[in-house]
Length: 323
Image 1 (tube, one colour):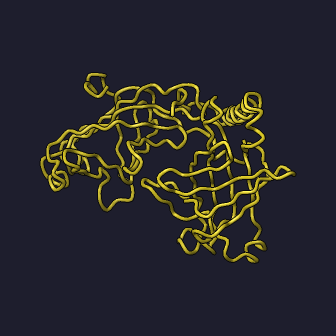
Image 2 (cartoon, one colour):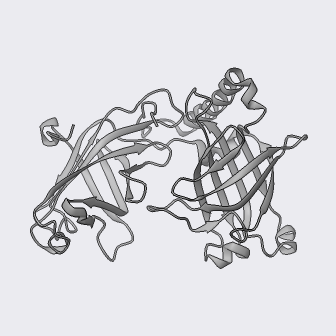
Image 3 (cartoon, one colour):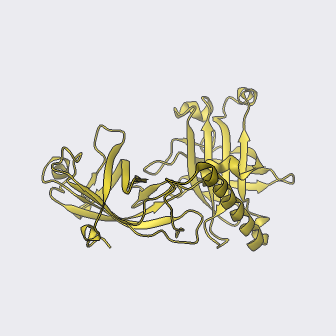
């Protein structure tokens, strides 16, 4: 997916930035309506939401979703690039209690077809949509994973019981109701960033990190930048145990303003990156790098929920060979 140029919003007035984001959301809807009138009758666009009352949940103890928001959009000007972002606030009952996620807010990204069906990659399930005469949206699913993690799968399911049909009815809502879904996460400016450590203890098992980030692509709803991530490993420690002692390994990554994450594959984890002054704050709970013969190492330090690094801007020569 190609994306538009990301901008560092550190010095932007929050009120003006919020107005700009709402204007962006409105412009997306306007362009879709103008350019794809035939598809607009089939595919939902914009924000749909539903908050369930305590009484409703008490009357439906098997329902584990307390609130649901969906943002439908086109990734680009191509009407075939339809997608949906889903946000579910889980109740402490039904599948929410079953999966231990009561009170949590779980999200998911899905691709949609021209018939209004949306699916999650990596076998994460499907839901179907139908526009009702009053403008409401009828959503049906037998399995749809909720909760984007660093690997395939999710924390729970939009269906109350996998394999059994579950239905939701949502109403069209103002774009700001779905702001948490369509707002962009700023990416660092293009360039070479890195950090070197004196030993693997200071580097949490690593000796060096490099991130080469290219300018974000233009013309898409959520800007995305391609790049390369490289690690230098020590001779001993976890690297030696994985058969990668002394290796220097690089992987291509793509970094999205949709969630501020860089990924190298579907099931290999993610790096969270954000501007930090003129450098980069990098954190991860899981990110695999691979060597020869499928040898691999998770750069996240064991025993830590999140491993963090602060990368500083470096001269382009420090990222030589990573282009």
